[in-house]
Image (tube, helix red, strand yellow):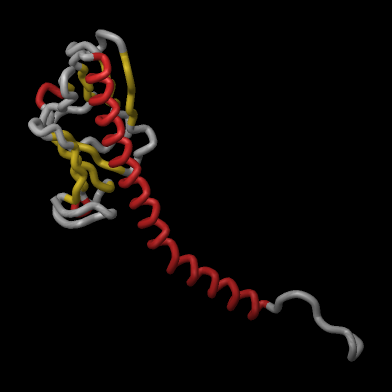
Length: 174
């Protein structure tokens, strides 16, 4: 090798040091990245369910008819699968009547859901659009301390999202 020529590429030591630094950076970033995904999923589910209920209320008033949201998962049981469905129909019998809207849990794989509505349905009054009293509880699977609640109350017909035990994801404590 001549004096003016330089070696090209990394030496083994440089490669090991660079790789170690990159691994350290990735290990530091992964937990915060997981938290960002979790927060986004929880906020999105809260928004989706609230939007579904608001839509059902407005449709009940617009049609001047009692509407029913049928839930495919049982009352007071933590449902960890993402195959749950909420179907808005004009019949109080599951599978009957005209389907108006559907909300599925297929895009919420890492969220556990539970509800407290009797007979696994929510009725919406055709005159004022008030939903039957009850609540949805949902939290990241395996972490029930980060639970959000969506409450419907009749009267006065409010829909409220709040953190069950503390303020979470930008929502106040219940």
